Image (cartoon, rainbow, N blue to C red; front, side, top):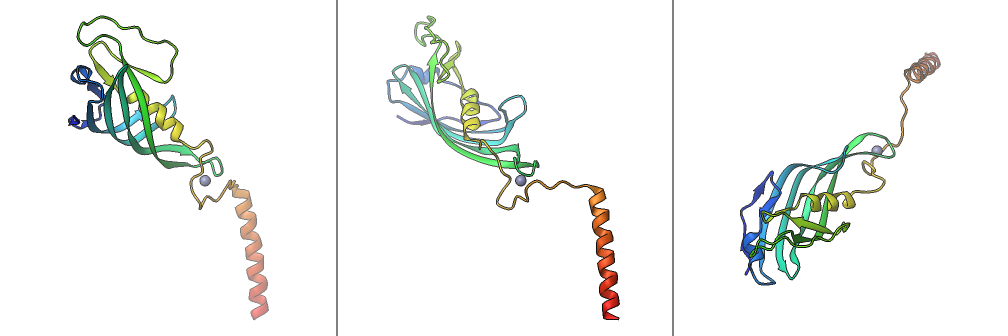
Length: 178
Ligand SMILES: [Zn+2]
């Protein structure tokens, strides 16, 4: 019953008209690659790759899969930007907005963050699901890595002072050896 769909490149929309006409349990599998997925006003995911299996269920379509990629985050300790890789498994339910056979509009549950909608052209867009999954996969307090040096203020005055002290020390040592 599983059919392989063409891979999606920089696209997150798949037409599911045929799958909606299939019996419950029928599946379609595809891979996608997207250069950039906007997450919110400031963040976006890059190099996003996912393998997704769509399964026909009683109420619509279940999207199941795994997504990987990177997001530029700011380290909470040293305040520098770094690339945070992510990997997450997900399940998301998509409800059709029209009946695929009759073309009649179907009731859409409102105010349900867990549900995604298949539009009237039977196009299923996985982007809102991926956005939700990726945001949840990111650390609450991102740290750039085990080698993070922590917060290191750099004041030129400090450096000069340090150099002067070193110069004094070198002079003393030099005199000691002479
Ligand atoms: Zn850091």
